[in-house]
Length: 328
Image (spheres, rainbow, N blue to C red):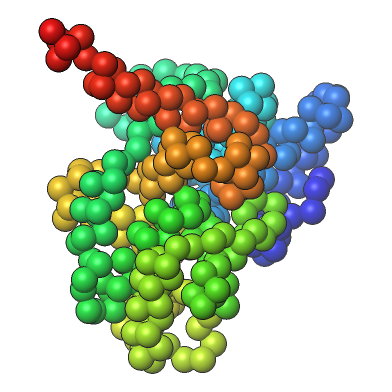
């Protein structure tokens, strides 16, 4: 098996599950390549479970958790359909093994009867969505920022910095959540994020984003969290909080709350990434390779989705300018 990441390696339950699943696979005389694919798929799911604060016990994992993982692979990693289906089959084998071993009552990916007595159909293999992603227009982004941009409290300034950084860089939720104070250089307008494969990459921020972050840093220094708190984003629970650092879920709730205040309905952090990518594609200021570098994409699948989104907007604008009725 491959070496586990630091976080996964410290989780005895997950390490033991992987080791036992690996022994099971080798006993079934499958090809070594198939076994490696299944173990890799399961490892990625367990890392996802840790990163996204999913329930720790296999009995608590649900269909929605698995679907969230598959969506993460397709939308954030831009996997090809063949690779996504390999991950699906590997995870399917893992849950089937847990069910056979009695670790879970049924596989969340299989057909089962839920607690209300309704039969739930078997989960279907994923399909790569080639339609244009949903993005927020400039006026919607202004409304979102407007809920906290002029605020003077530490929470307002923190939320404004979070939203501003999402909009200005298109970074992933995980990348933004894991930032430390040392990763931000507002003097030189740079932020260093750690992307997939623990690969760091620099992101350039504009003058307004640097200002938003600096306004937050000024009030952040006034909080008595101690010198060892390096996490950039601090919670608002005071000294009674178990930890000062905000979690993925905490930052996600910031976006939910501010979007509701702005009257935008449910807005997900990844929609801000969509909006950034759409804007970059529509502006034609950067090459495809430059956009992929900034976004941390290794596949062109996501680039093609945003190209479709930008092309759709240009077509609508052209049709508006060339309205036959207006010319009559």
